[in-house]
Image 1 (cartoon, helix red, strand yellow):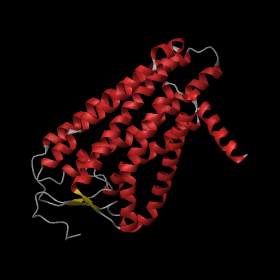
Image 2 (cartoon, one colour):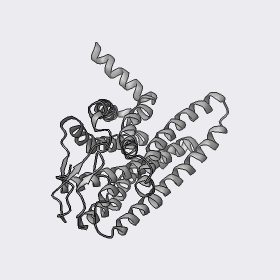
Image 3 (cartoon, helix red, strand yellow):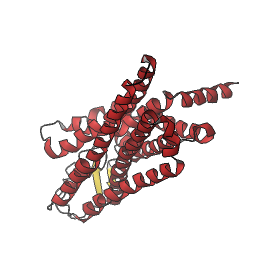
Image 4 (cartoon, helix red, strand yellow):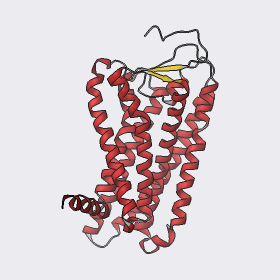
Length: 315
């Protein structure tokens, strides 16, 4: 460790990822659930993409958003898990400086996109429940495509300053990152310069951009709940409430660990480092495995197509 913890460099060629500090002895055991989750997430999201692509009846706004979410989840977990598992299994801790910045960009860019997709899906649910007769005329394929492009553009442009600013800082303290991946603030903390620009811009993205996403989703689901409780029958209310409740639960699973990790980096000096790193991995691993279940298997149309897929192969 002391070989890497030097003070004589300004532009390191590599960084050293520690994995989960304090739990190095358990890395092999920790890798088992990580690897299992990764395999299930990849299979689940590819299955969603395959079913929607091959079934024309699923070519609608909700399923297009679901496909966007599946692609985002695949990129998110594939940006971090292979390197994390290589640390656990082979003690392969080095990561090239440019590769670290690329990983940093992909993680935060697609986290931003995922947040935007959740907003789009909340809007879709709002229109479907509050204005069911106008759903197809409001959410046309053209509008869905524009929303998708806006989500991609917003994520890619807002996160672009992250690696640009990180690249310009001098690094003269250490090149050791106490994390499983190149998280933005974890890298910025290694710089030996005034990094307030990076810190303040990161806070702006979190509080303003994601804050607006939270407000929009909260307003959408408030209107949805009002519409649900005005439905004439108890069965209809329960069905709509279960569907929207599960969707909102997935968003909270994505949001809460993400905000916890971001705020802990800045204000949580007393939080144990290994707990912080585990929470940071939670919001990158849990949504990719939950989304295919909540949005896919619990959706009747996809569940029927999945059943037909397996039964046709079995005959």
